Image 1 (cartoon, helix red, strand yellow):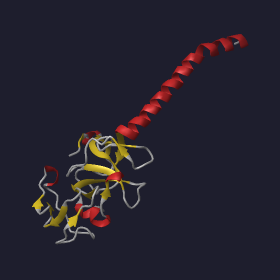
Image 2 (image 1 turned 135 degrees about the vertical axis):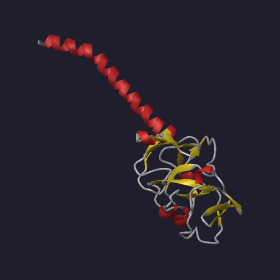
Image 3 (image 1 turned 45 degrees about the vertical axis):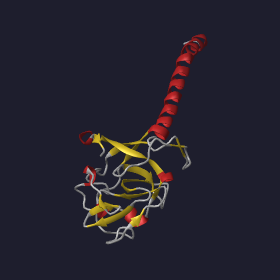
Image 4 (image 1 turned 180 degrees about the vertical axis):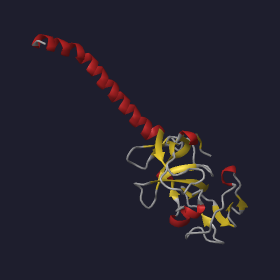
Amino acid sequence: MTEKSNISWLEKTKPEIKEWVETIFVALILALIIRSFIVQPFKIPTGSMEETLLVGDRILVNRFIYGLRIPFTTKRIFKFKKPERADVIVFNYPEDPKRAFIKRVIGKEGDVVEIKDGKIYINSKLFEHPAIKNIYYYNQGNLGLINQKIVVPKDSYYVLGDNSRSSRDSRYWGFVPDKYLIGKAFLIYWPIKRIRIIK
């Protein structure tokens, strides 16, 4: 192949290479935007949410439902709603914000939470919800003792794992501040046999 034909080949392929580079760049930017603001995948590392979530389950988390979080900060804009009791949420672990935890919301700001005879009482009333009806909650930790009534502070949440016996949750380390919310877990997408909406 002559030098002239080499130059000719390069001139012909330059537009194609440029198009590929632009396509890849746009795809990366879109992926970053989607992951940062819309939906983010997570892998379940422990059994603290069994039987709802099993070790190795891969889930999708809705990042915008509780407000769009400005990357690399804890500031949030455009809040659509606040977490409801029984929502399964992902958040930055208050004792080490670099780590993400997943638990179920039990108490919201101003709620008085009590664990009694394996059941949850909110403001002295039995909290009944289909997602937790078969869960036995154990009196453990400093904020989950027998006859202890816990008041949830402003802009915070009291969260528990569905596998109450083996979950390190609000009973041990306290409350999740609103600023640490990442999003709501809504779908198990892997493994295939486990695909389902998270309730």
